[in-house]
Length: 281
Image (cartoon, rainbow, N blue to C red; front, side, top):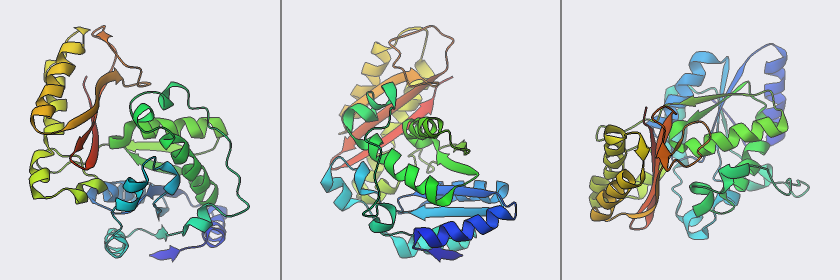
């Protein structure tokens, strides 16, 4: 596996590969890799001539400085996992390579309602930071396809919007959420859970499963109330638990029994904030 730390170096290398007709798959990450990330690497390896993974903890998408400070960094382990997966290229840039002094970000990315609901509501400025870093990474890597995980479904929609705004020739492949045997969605933040918290955390999956098993046409408030009580009794502080359109994340208060839905949840388990979602129909 080749490791690049400078933007110009990896761009030059990939430009030569692209000139030879090679397709490039790209998996952007913030490190602390797990099997969910590796599933994206494997998907890219099966479909692309070259697979690039980036590891960069992006400071501009953290609306809470303490969250940024506590974000797990496990770069030696990450490199080992990527080598075992036979990833072709790792891009491991310092901050000044992503945000050089002469770099100017667009003043604002027009994300519409996506920026006002769910994660957008509870993490103001978060998706602007996501767009900043993804735009830069796409400029540097210029991939054929970007591979993303469904666990961050709202972020996937934001990146899709970013690509549409920039009219970029990049395909998006959204891959299924990977889960541990007890249902907990794989996440880098899981590393911050202690043993007792880890035992409680699958309640998120149980709450989403409860919604999926009991959803009916008509008002949705009662089922969401029951699911929130389930989580509160386990010790979660719920930011939101919602049912939304799987197409655009418009919140659904009354379901017509036909439109495709997704249930989404974000909740704190003591100091760790976890998110998850589940397609319902």
